Amino acid sequence: MKSGQLPIIFRYRLLWHILFWTVIYLSYVISYGGYTDNYLRELGINAVLMPIRIVFTYFMLYFLLPLIIKRDYGRFISYSLVHALLFGSVIWFVYRYYAISMNIADADEMPLLYYSKIFVSIISNYGIVLAAGMLKLFKWWYIDQQYKVKIENEKLESELKFLKSQINPHFLFNTLNNLYALTLKNSNKASDVVLKLSGLLDYMLYHSKEERVTLAKELSIIENYIELEKIRYGDRLKLSYKVDGDPSACNIAPLILIPFVENAFKHGASNDRQRPEINIKIVAEKNGIQFNITNSYPLHVSTSEKGIGLKNIRRQLNLVYPKRHQLDISSEDQMFKVQLNLNC
Image 1 (cartoon, rainbow, N blue to C red):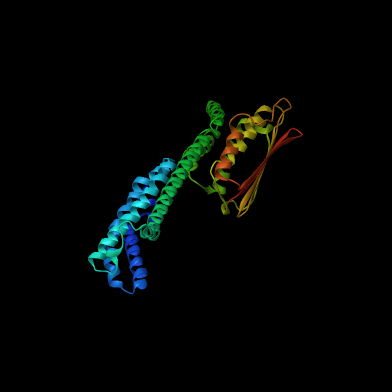
Image 2: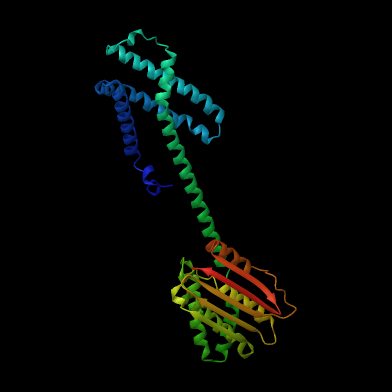
């Protein structure tokens, strides 16, 4: 994770480290100076002790904490106990030597191995090491979480692109066959077919990469698709298409509705040799849409969700609209029904 992407508390490392140690230094001077009523002496003592605190703290951060990442907890605990004992001992030894050199009362009468003083030194100083260690662990945890989120997002994005790439290609063959037949007949419909097909391809290749498009744009592509399919089925297709509300008031993910329309033609109308029926109704609202589509199917055709179409669109909806959609699919009286509610 790049440093510029981290929260400000994790950026400008040098400045934050300087600020951290400045605060620690002043805290000791103020607290102990108030206790001894001698701030000047505490300025000197803590100036001498600060390098020790810094060295032992960074030793913990860069040599002992990595053992936690490696899950070597036994060595971490044992080394940390030794580290704390050495820390407290060095602090006490240096303090005693400084106190003797500054002729602080009774300093020379205190033994070098003054265990109670060593223990007090650990208690009063090791909090710095613990605080710095917690900050370091939190930074590692945060960066790891962000990395996992990034990997997951990249994985989902790749999956979404794969799903989109598998939606809508197979109707092109029928459209091209229809176009070929129209050109043989010198039909004036050929140019209109080319224009609508061009619009579909442009949408699928370029606009499908957008995160959101207006519902009106998605519906215009659906209408183009329907017009192309109507050329194939002619008068034997019974089609109802209705839009209520304002399609420009809602934005949706591209190519989220057209797979249902394609499925109705591919598995319904194309298998019905009598009089296929498709009914489409869309209700557009500011906060969402209601999409309903039904298509007839002959008795010999299975209504199970086989193939890539509906399975892919279910997965796509779960990726793009997690917990913000409701999809109901059913079949009754030789009619296959899809009802989709989306929160924009």
